[in-house]
Image (cartoon, rainbow, N blue to C red):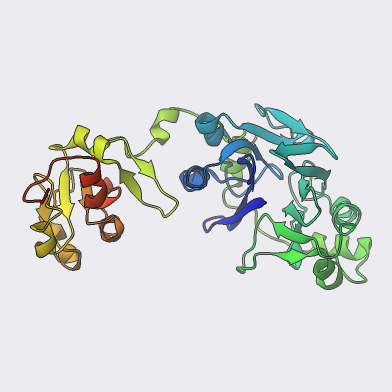
Length: 357
């Protein structure tokens, strides 16, 4: 069975795609975004996957790839078009190459036009294809920079994408209207730029008259992506929340395990967001915990030290996760949820005050 997730970066309207083989748990990421690496890594870890490669549809002009950061974390290969001119990739892809993940694979199709190094990735059974910025939902990528060429894009779409089965689902690199997926049959019939009876000259004239401003991040994104996302300067500065051994979840919450909390106890503020009857109840409470029920937390934040990290705890970790969210929203930077709450704390044999045996 194929493991498949479509992820979205709201800042650049970029889609990232995770594909995994359920039998071997090997996986690839298509077009990861630098700022979303923690999110993507959390999903990979929670699904128990082994990331073997990050693959780029092209050298992006509107965001920096997360490929280098993910390679540093997982040892995954970075793959990009041979025509891209990018440096420091592990694999340079050409037309009809195959990218394997477990028993599944993506076939590489060269689809230049938006840039000279654009690629489309077609799933082994031709049920899905990932078109990057070549073909979008009822649209296309622009062709006015990075060696773009309208006639080349027209030929790419008609010979490499529209020749796929009608029912093949197409997943673009971006969408600015909230649309998520289309199909070969739909785009061949309804795409106003490339479908129906639109000819190559029609498309070329259309693209020549778009007159769009350049992407805001182009001067930052293109040089960084030519290095496959490796930043300049101190890379260790990228690691946040270094005050404890924390884990980032796909839900967007930093968590700390009971054993890791023991190492920082006394150096952090511990907030218990249960009700007072629970605080003194059978599960007990942790030494030095400050009781602030979740319903009272927003009104009590002025009493908290913004310079000290905060760990939030409840019975199971659910209410405390909401507490973390509220504290982060209020501007507290170093906040973590005690994973599993008091239930896991007691199961781990950690000490409590006023609790039953």
